[in-house]
Length: 565
Image 1 (cartoon, rainbow, N blue to C red):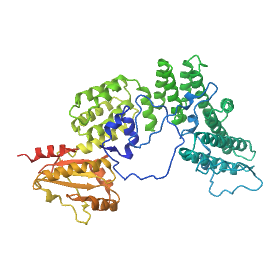
Image 2: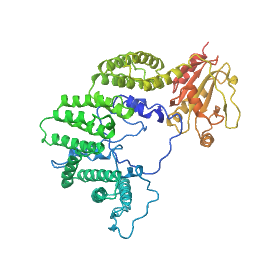
Image 3: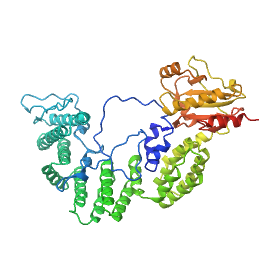
């Protein structure tokens, strides 16, 4: 298996093109640094859009998979849109206040401030925050930041708390945040940014409460959002617009909105300003699409999908761009055809022609740059699976199709993927060159010692599970093939030499292991265009690279071909 490198996670996750395909392509590891072990509990208070039919699962990439929230689908008639609308990473929060003013040296609450007892501490997690009501706007800004951190603590503690305790504590924090936001926004001493922060805090707090099925808070949220539509601040107007769009979605669900076409106009208006095309808007629009499909309004859902793609197709954020494409192609037969054609990847039953035909069909149905970008992302995964010839054919076809893209499209992402592929392919037929490598004793690598032998070169890392799974196959080849004709050269890409020393002490491979003399693994990745680990090369008796990605039982098979007279 391979796991995509972190530098390519966003691109590769969307490139997978369909639900479940990442499972087929988890065939490599991060190429630059070992993944850090995060032993702390960390929870992000954000919600992705509902999963569509072709939403891509994370490869551990990342790459980051945010779960969908359908909380608003389960609320009663008088309930409100999901709080996801205001808990998106792009949505403002009180913790953003540090951007407006430094909080490092703020004074603590003074005796003349109104202070109430701290919140109860359910279960084993101590939630410590006190209500503050001060005429000093700076202190109120700090208080809002403290409340945000308390909410984060609650999320972390939720696994150890019963549902009732979670809801009660969350409601208490939200009401405290609402009161703090109202007070800050009303202070005559507050500057415009502080007033705005207080306004945002109210919107978020009401959204929290309405998500907890507080009917009164839901009514307040609707009224508050409606008032924001007349605000002089464009951001606040847009925030109100997002909330009211969520209410419209719910009205449709609850039978209070009879004309689904109304959502089309609202969706288009929601992303009319390029400045407000982020995760918050994508989450709202994806929710609308999901609801329209669920209720049988396919034409309206398609119209919103088109609107979403038009707005996000040229976004610099690859995640948003890819999600828009996922929405556009969610029920596509041509996409399904491509997914099906890849099912046999890595097996003897794999149909090379079916992949090329399906790729052409997908681009024909969705003739846009993002489709080509998605297909380009398949090249590396197909190559690393061992289908080197197919990856080259696909790369050449994509290269020709780039010429047909609109003149304003830079195709940077597509060209980068193809360039990495071509760099690796360029080694086939060339003499292997390896410089400035040494073993753990400091002895330099001399390729001349391998002259006249078939050589397996393995670029790997100790923190890469697929690399470690390959070691038994390499050992088998090393023991099976005659040592006078066959050799293994291991090139370790760990940045930490001590980590390699520990590994070698426990495992002691029978073949030599080298690493960059100065620890500069980056120069090697650039030299060979390595984007995934492990990368294996088979070198003939003349020292020329003849094949890439030779792994498993295929090592012996391919090596024997080169050893034959």
